[in-house]
Amino acid sequence: MSLNETPSANRLHISFFGRRNAGKSSLVNAVTGQDLAVVSEVKGTTTDPVQKAMELLPLGPVLIIDTPGFDDDSGPLGEKRVERTRRILRKTDVAVLVVDAAQGLTGTDEELLGLFKARGLNYLVAYNKSDLLSDRPTEAPGAIHVSALTGDGIRELKEKLAALAAGQEPEPKIVGDLIKPLDFVVLVVPIDKAAPKGRLILPQQQTIRDILEAGGATVVVREAELGGALAGLASPPRLVITDSQVFDQVAAETPPTVPLTSFSILFARYKGFLDQAVRGVRALDRLAEGDRVLIAEGCTHHRQCEDIGTVKLPRWIRDRGGLNLDFIFSAGGDFPEDLSPYRLVIHCGACMLNEREMKYRQRIALEQNVPFTNYGLAIAHLRGVLIRSLGLWPHLVAELEA
Image 1: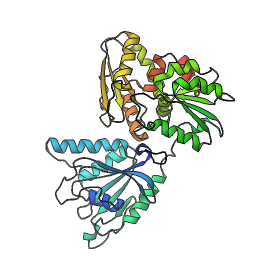
Image 2: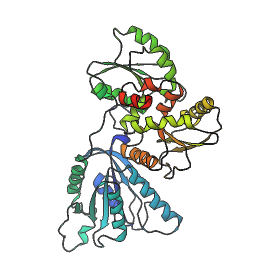
Image 3: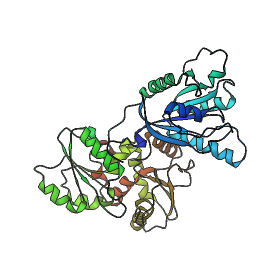
């Protein structure tokens, strides 16, 4: 991924929902101008969510998602379709309910509308196949009549989606609001077997882009060169940001007057769960023999022999307390809704998940009274640099020291 590409997690997620054979896939294809989804007269052709990152005028960078039919479908396959559709709701920013115009709203459609409202989603009802109607009805607010077959109403549908998108909260900054133009920021990026060959990982790319957009200057070094880089600067940097895995080494080499944090901690803030993650990290001190800990990742990358989530973090936690703990791992969209079996959830930085998905995950942890933290904070605490890693946010330091 280049620095010019918008990551999927940062794109507006627009999901198309509806009953089987309401024409969702045909409408998605008409909106995108591509054969994104398979179209058939057979009900239930779409069995898995189909998604595509693209530029959609006048919206800009979006992620379009075509979902399986949300019907009272019997059998294991139907139940899986409905469950996958519910999962998509977790990360949807704008929902489009596709209704067969000839049939009108059904009980299933009303159920979907209830789910949209319960989740506080911006949504639009698109009455598809309107070319089959003899008279076009007067449209209610929040509804539009379209035809995927003839293209009628597609431009208006895009404009209505753009209007809904305009109501979304502005995108937060990773670090740009913490620095001033011409501030120097040092990024410490280890290069090991787990690093992708020939490129930086997504959080590092995004942080560099955010610093540049804020008018700052960045120096990127490995941990072995950090001391020489700091000594070569004419004045101390405004901030040092490190990969969490080398927190202790970087903390030892960075002057105490220079703020220090990690990519993972910055991403917890960027995704809106830093405060909750700070409160949850102390649960590491309360773990007891046999406790179950969920370690969750937002992506499904190939596991390396020294993977941070499945190997290093569990080892560090066991070594610190000498406890026999039960670590359970989840990846991608397989985040459990029932967290009651766990004494602690440790999440990755969530660079591959959008903010709405992360708010859902932190909300169910809060509702079920399960502590929720992330990799960076857990490692900072295990390495004894937690307070220092939060120096940019005095209110959180005060909360920990209270």
